[in-house]
Image 1 (cartoon, rainbow, N blue to C red):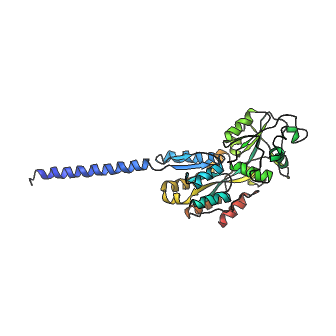
Image 2: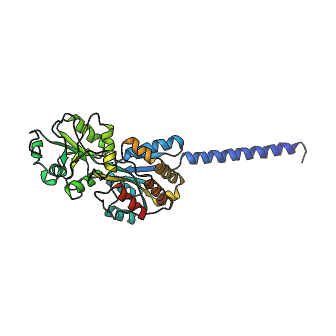
Image 3: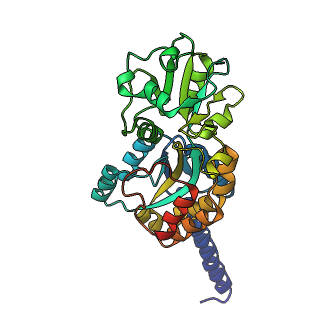
Length: 340
């Protein structure tokens, strides 16, 4: 070989190597940018927490797309057990039928409590007659027997005006609907049907805001977001009227309408997808501030520490045996988590 050709051949090989490395790096970047998105659905109550955390996460992790939506807790679990989403937001624990559905599909889940909520009864600010309401009166309004019969305010409490009673509440795919009916009516899913129903809590809020004769219920965050346009009604469960707030939930006074909120993570998806694992760790770390910001009650520090431990150990299953526990307190939730 001619000595003058040697450097040229070397330069060609070096150029080819540089091009090859660049192509490999571009390919890796393309794969990273096209990685499978993290999909989340479920409770509209939990949605503000998850959405806030997802937006924050994506500012520092732009290559990880996080898709958040809400179809109600029941709708979210349906998608979760069908492997359509990686995380289910839930405003109640997973129930026995959903556990069976997930088991049949081979979906093992990690249950992570993220906040406490005060399920809030609201009326229009022009309503000057309702200063408080009893659980028995809520039952009289909402039970199946009330359908087509309890249609005026004075039928609920003598002394309230003879004005039409317009009701707004979550639809039947909502975990809030499930919890409310069990806590107030005594039977899950037992409710009158002649009311304006929606899985979107903003629709409920708007309905009450626009109608002086309306009453509705949803999570505390939606009241906090609309408190200048809505009036929260203190609830009397036998110990006097108690208003929904961070303090009354922490003091275990707002019963039976205080409840834990959850996310459920597909354990295998978290094992197989590093991006999902990192997102859930970020979620747990940032949950206390996000929960407080959107208007719910953060768990004690120990609660998030236990959630982190359970996730890192891939502790699958539930501590609720397929049913909600009424009158659960923050301290009782911590004890359940500690024994998990």
